[in-house]
Amino acid sequence: MKLKTRSERMKIAIPALLVLGLLSACNPAPKYAKPPAQTPAAFKEAVPQEYKEGTGWKVAQPGDDKIRGKWWEIYNDPQLNALEEQVQISNQTIAAAEANFRVARSLVLSGRAALFPLVSASAQYTNSRFSQTAKGANIVGTGGAANTGTAVGTTTGTGSTTSVGGTSGTGVINNFSLPVDVSYTIDLWHKLRNTVAASAYQAQASAADVATALLSTQAELAQDYFQVRALDAERIILRDTVANYRRTLDLTLSRFRGGIDSDEDVSQAQTQLDTAIAQQTDLGVARAQYEHAVATLIGKPPAGFSLSVAPFTPTPPPVPVALPSELLERRPDIAAAERQVAAANAEIGVARAAYYPNLTLSASGGFETSTFTQWFDWPSRFWSLGPTLAETIFDAGLRRAANQQAQASYEGTVATYRQTVLTAFQAVEDNLSSLRILSEEIVQQHTAVNSANHFLNLSLTRYQGGVDSYLNVITAQNTLLSNRETELQIQLRQMTSSVSLIMALGGGWNASQLPNMKQLTAKQAGGNHPPGSLP
Image (tube, rainbow, N blue to C red; front, side, top):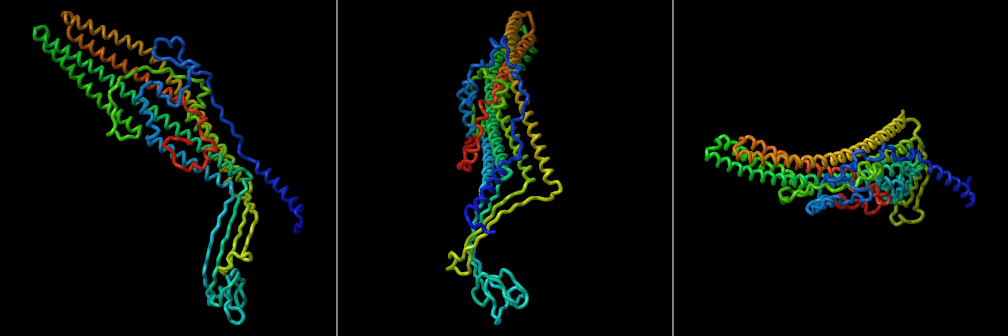
């Protein structure tokens, strides 16, 4: 029945639109909530009050400022600051991670495009000739003349064909066409929107991966830098030791010439000196390797980079330690794991939408003729439109398997997220305990160095007085050297543990820095950005 009035058409259109609106609000994906994770009320290894004074390290008070983005500045080392500034600009690992983020962001734009109609147009001209001798292909009409026009249906025998236009009796056909096709899939069951959401969550996880890579590289650079400075300090220790060994050798030679010592004592003193010189030279190997590592981290060839000798200042600064619950927002790896959970949750909605029918609206229109001069005339127009409702009737369990897979993937990401949280708490506790225990140990080791130095002075005095043999002096010298090197290693461990603690606490990063949907779909999203930077 043909509708004759506008009101009659509206009576059907309005209910249809209401039904489509209600259906489009149906989202089969589970409502997302961040998975709960076991979070302690406080860190067990936070430094007790009795360890805070006089031990060389303490946890910052609750009122102190939080860790800033440029966390390395708390070490007050200008050279370290200059090196850290180059990591984001030149490090190729950060550049690769940032490129992966832009790939993920492009997938968001690609998925979002499916929410809009697809419009395509193509201008076409064809010139064709049909065979007049092939049976059933081109039919000779009344009078023996070949029919003209484009055959859209053929018969056998001596009939005529249906055509859209002709040229001449030669069977040569011209066709000028300009169709415009429009196709739009109505997202009734949020399949497309859940796909976009999953891609957006993946892109946010990729952005967090960039932050994780940046933080890891910055921490590695700081630790390698402190290794170089510790080797410089060890070189000073060995330089002083070599100087002391030379004086002791001179003393032994003097006593040997006086007939007091034997040549055995002289040989022992000479061996001890030569060993210390070789040990001092060997430090160059490790220092060169760490220097090369620093060069690589800032994106420079090792051949064109060097670190001058500088003092080692083993004073780990107070590190602000927030509540464990805040750690969930400050660690980029935790944020990345949580965004993966959100993406897997959206994928469940995509899998569930396969159970429901797809509604696609299609339309095509344009101009078509066999004469160029009539190509855009109004009578040359054509059009067609209509909806398509498609539903899978039988798939042998394919959709059920896809849903089971999506659910299992979601549960796997939840487990990974919770394990990441546990590992993060472990890292903080490990480094807190390391700093607390090392702060005690450094005091004890410094006392041991003083005792070893006193032991050496006594041994030299007794050796010069002829009371003890030179063997006691050698033992005392080796003991002092060993204790000084141990003290230096404890100080280095303090500094590297301090860096590790800052890294475990997120290095000043916060989940609010993740790009939102507006940033992910901005027009400049397809452009290039400096390595490690986020929009």
